[in-house]
Length: 410
Image (tube, rainbow, N blue to C red; front, side, top):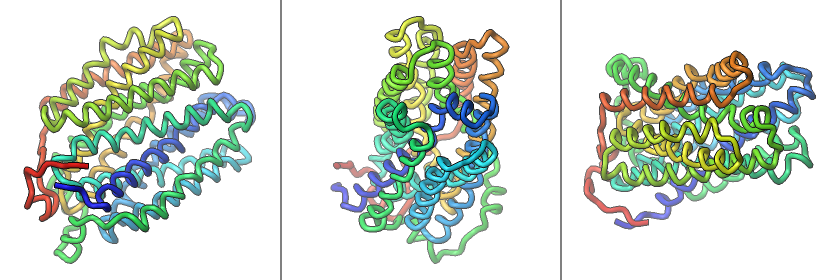
């Protein structure tokens, strides 16, 4: 079948929303050293800003998800993007470390809402046969945002400084106008709008085993991704290897090109291989890559390892938007995927502090700390997914049920 203009637009809007959300988040990880010096705080205190951002995301996922389930995916997505853009801008005006930590915690609330709403709106709107590829595309928004952040740092950071870099975070607000004009509301939400509804607690009590599985799976996934990303540019490349800002941001950009390739490729093939099998293959690629990624001695080896590691990490993640939305109870689809994802983020929010502690206990060896975390959770993900559920291709709306075998054509 041919796609409607609104279906194409909703994919673009959701991708851009997650891309620019990640862009705002990852600007922070390049700035630890300078923020620490200017605001007279230790590196451990500055890294707490990331912990707070990640830790507050479940609140945003629940609040904005409930708004989306009640009032519609489209308006909730608009409110969410405006909120995180404003808070990113406010971060650059923080006069002291305490204020910055508060603003980054509030940013975490806003950041927590976008993924669940955007993925639900997209998966409910597009043909089922396109979900795998689009899932990979949506998830590549995360490394795309990281790539844009590293590129912005490469081009502007030495001239602008950390405060003005945060001002770039207001850019996502521009896509609000695109969403309001070019995106239709989810057909699945329209069908359920006037139907008798169950409360979120009732649904979670009914599907508590699924919720517990989703939370722990997302905990493992977030340790897997943040374990490979949070300490990488600022601590591993700049502090341990003494690379300058331009070289560290260049290697980080290369890693995110790998992430985009991995997300698109594994998202595409999960329609043929299945969600679980694809995740397992992608996650296991991380194990033979670990020596090059964490213990390489030259920029070329480190860049190659970084590229391949993110092919693995974001390849596995590329299946998650469609996998969680297909597993989700339909009554709370805007809430459930984002909420379990962000609760997993909350449980994994100690990652950076944990890696810093491990590194400091081993002579500031951040490569060892990253390898321990990433290798462990590659195995954990493989085992959890191997014994977990899969509901590939389920209908989310009457329109999708009417064309279960339809071929998607962009």
